Image (tube, rainbow over all chains, first blue to last red; front, side):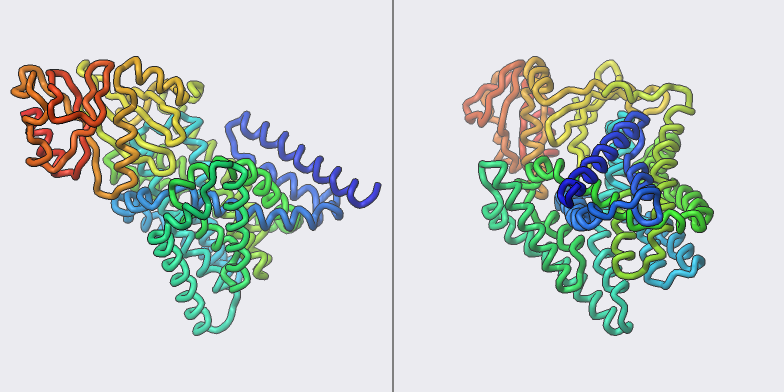
Length: 387
Length: 159
């Protein structure tokens, strides 16, 4: 077969494999992310079958995948939702950070990672997967539950905290002396604030730039603008992911709903490529040695996450059963942990990759199972069948 | 009936209420349009016991059948966009001094700063009612204003 034919056949088989895995995962009420990671680990570097032809394409598509993941994250929440969450649940967000980041940091240092790698691991254990959690709340019929506003507020706060954490991490990973790191950090935080202020003041102009009666135009304009800003922020050393996230936040609410619906399918395709690329670049042989550490880390951070969800729900006056539901539903880590690990690996902290892969493989499966168990144990069957 | 509006970030809004029979229930209105009807568990009052999930068109149809025509929601959207703006629904009680008198007599805007933007009467909705619009017991006034204004308006209409 010629090059193009091989490329297309390999890609076709890859995406069909992802389709089958996603179907199976959803059937058991699980996130497809760990299964796609397993597929990619089995292929690629050190795996069973090499993918020499399609790997460069998947790697390029993965960059777009990160950009779209972060863009849609930014589109997800409005400024009003952030303000409400901040006002009501700022302490919950701080408790969440204080309980869930240190285990990753300590584990990273114990594993002998450089401090920047340990800082990345702190983010990996800190940020819950808003994709998995939102899906669980819907699937388990919990959106009406009294603990759900607390759970969603914690997710919003984590996501907004990412806007500050990611640039700081990128600066730290880039290395340099403490002075340069501090300068970079100030620059990063300044950029975030400037973009937020500009979005607030010039929202109507952005609205005029992006809005059009034709869906195709909106899709192309938002996609184009996002890639442009992502590329520019990568060029100034702030990482494409951060730029895309800021675009997502800056897009006015009037466009955001439409953009989310239009970009969703595109995001799904490229995000799959991102998880594949991460798995392909990770040598499965490096996973086994770190698996015990990842299991221990998953166990510790399950407990800390349950505690932070418990605290957040208690602030809303929710009873014990509801606090336990809130705590367990937040346990799952997924896409953003992989995004953070991807940034670390790209910056040369290669040893974060296998730890993060093993950690997400464990906790993206155990988290959802745990919260389902909580639903079943107190007697009544869950109401998941209603939807 | 008291309806408590709660923001569900990234999802939409939840409208909680308790029926006269004492059943705690809520509507979860997703921002894409679907609506879930939830009833709380008597053993675990934090837990949504049964769920009826409606697509947007189904919710619209049932809303019309129930007479509210989702007016309240449109104003909930409005209050989401403008910080500090709140919307409220106030029922004119039976035996109220306003029963049979025009809306203008309440001097609602002058006294409370709130605007009554719609009157819901059975299956009929009068949007942008004029001051001459007569009020009847059982009418639901949909009003927008700030929090204290709405409280004052509730005292005025229901007091």
